[in-house]
Each structure stands twice: as C-alpha cells, then as structure tokens.
Amino acid sequence: MAGTIAALQKTLEDTIKAFNGRKFDEVKRHLAANLTVTPLRVRPSFKRNPTAVTYAGDKARESLHDQFIDHAQFLDEKYTIDPPKGEATKATIKGTATWKDDNGTDKLEFNFVCVFDDHKKSWLFETVSASVVGEKT
Image (tube, rainbow, N blue to C red):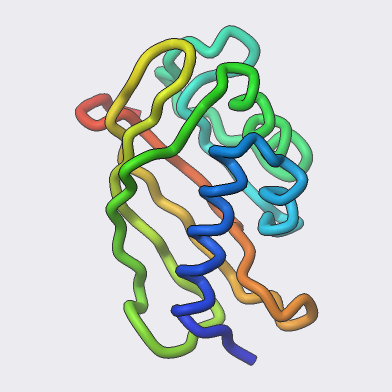
C-alpha cells in the first residue's frame, strides 16, 4: 500500500513543528527503525563535521536528540518532494532551510528519504542529512 504525498507533506510539517518545539517524543514517532542520520555537527563537541559521519539506528536517534542541547530550530524551509503528487511507498524531500541554534545561524541544504509504513499507515523518515550551503561534506 502507498501513502499520499499530501500526507507526507503534513508529516514533514508536523515533524518540523515538533522539532522546533523541542518535543522529541513526537519527532521519534516519525522515524523509521532503520534510520540513518548525517548530522550537521558532530557529537559531543558540535564542531563542523568535515568528514560527514553517518549514524544508524539508536545512534541516529541520539544524534537528532543531541540537537536539542543547542536549542536548534529548523526555519524558513523551502523544499520539493519527489514524486510531487499522488501516492508512493518512498519519496525524497530536498530543500533549504535556516538552521538556528546557540552557535549561530546557517543556511542548510537538506535531503530526507521517507518511506510509507504500511503497518503504521504513516510516513517515516528513513534517511536524514544536511550540510551548510557552500561547505563540502
């Protein structure tokens, strides 16, 4: 069974709202069991990540949760979804956003791969990655 792209867009909006509101339990319910994350900053120093480390599973969830330490916010997002409409079992969201935290503000490029979970009847984030615009990862 496939999920609608309209439902995926709503899931994205709800997840960003939960992230910005520091409600990690709400964010977690939208994460796939096999989640991978390439974070903007490396734990625990939160320095720029020159080697683009990717975390999987529980470490991936941890790396997302660590963003709350610096009061991160994901703002002014502009994105496209592929496929752009209809139904799908997998979709990619690419775009830009402003990342604001205790360390400052950066312009990000992000890439999210989402899968529709037929059992849960909902969209889940399977791959989450971001980089600062103009920086090589």
